[in-house]
Length: 221
Ligand SMILES: [Zn+2]
Image 1 (tube, helix red, strand yellow):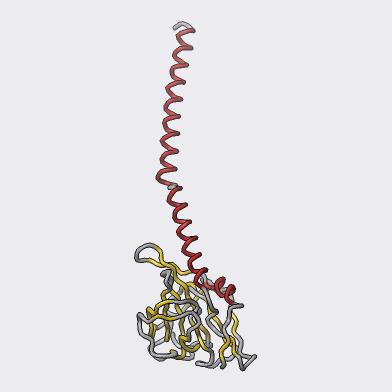
Image 2 (cartoon, helix red, strand yellow):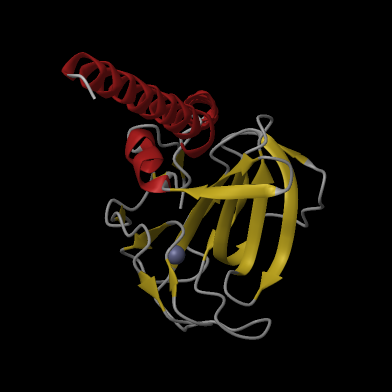
């Protein structure tokens, strides 16, 4: 074979190989963008999540426990215990914030609705005790648990206003109906946002409560 033909063969081979590699690169990048990393969808999900949280922020009106007009020693405190381990009823993460009471007396502290909404759930839950669940106009769910008692006989579907008395802080739950005293008096607050058709997602109420700390009603108790 002449050296010119050898060079021509070599160049042809290189050209073919280049075509194959280029083709694979295009195929690979299409696969990555289109199937493994659907960037358009991820951006869409992020925007949905951001907008959903913004709706929660926009509807917060009052801290759930009013200030005592009569007893300066009646205080409440809460920490960020998001997903801290809980063991009653199987190991799980803490999906909420516990507002603890300096006066460890069931029925002492009033609990008001943080938002406007509709009463959706009321009654006993093994883990939540006497609880009440309020659905806001934006579709978010506010769960108040371990109540000592209700302000009145609530019915599902009844409207409630932000700042309206729901019931009183207690220590109910962690057992069959009527169980009390399994833990100190506190209010467990959970906030759930809708996620698609039938799903919901718990968000950390700690930051919402921090925001509401200087938005407290004053009640005489
Ligand atoms: Zn809790």
